[in-house]
Image 1 (cartoon, helix red, strand yellow):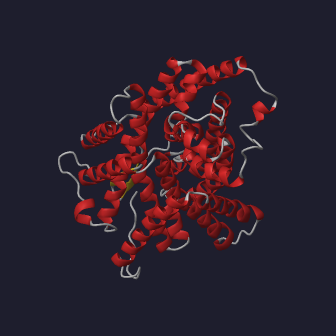
Image 2: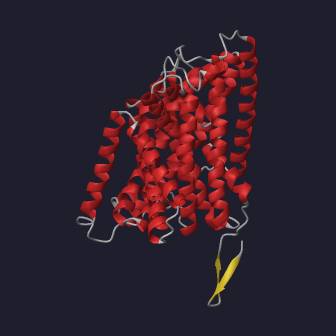
Image 3: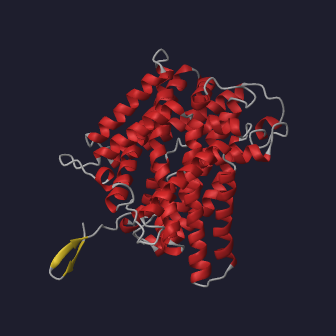
Length: 447
């Protein structure tokens, strides 16, 4: 740990030890190499069998946004947050709104994880009802976080490597399976990209709005700005590379799955469709291997996202954005935001029992796409307007990212749009009330 001396005192600073590929590895671990597998079923159904096309289109949108994230990280190397970029470059009120949309992401992450964990567990123990599994995982996640149990970076890296091995095994078995079955014609291999009998622009865009889930987390690289070597160069490059690598890997996984299980055949359970695909490719052993891999991965991300949601609620409560007495409290013994952990547990329990996984993903992507639009708008304002660098690059990249994300936002189902708008209206109304019509100083979100 390096330090600097200020008026005779040593102030600790984070040591800049992370190179470009350290940042890329971190990003891939956060996103997870199995990212497209949980959302594969709902994405395939919504896109009418064009899941791989949806993943590729989503990659383009995320690449534009990754460029804007990277460029804004150069301006705010220690903040690394969408609401900071928007609040500083556009307006504090818009920063508040962006922050509120991010809160929805944090809250919905553990909810969708609990739905998936329960579905994966039912594949092993179908006699146990879904409701019982939901209660089990809510209690399990809450117990872990209330007792301060954390996974180390080494364990997370090991799990990511294990997932990579499982993906390779699946791809090998999928190739073997496809090589053994009869092919109708050359169109067999191109149909996952474009099937003239089922193609619909609206359907593909709907699938793409779900495929965004595959890339969620790439922006986390910007939080390592203070620990990275040459952050102004490496953070933008790493962010772009993580999106690109994730998109290519996800496309290969989804393409193989579509070859093994044609879109014309229904899945036993759309939420665990990829597990069924693995079972068809190689039998029960691969079914079980993929199922346990996704279960372990989702348990890790679900427990971690519950704590992350609790922490952002604590930051908001501490600064007065939401009632400080409840959300800003810290349990004195373990020094954790206990009230918030329990609050998230209740929300996740109610949500997992009342909404589908697809709706949860849509709502999560609603908040993410709003935040991404804000980052692109902030990059446009800073580089094209404030600095006056009116080049084609400074105009086209952020505007393309903004309108692509807007198009995907509008491609969500009307139910998700209504629920998302209601959430945003509640946040805006409370913010206006708390600041007397946004006349007082706005809350600084502490992520």
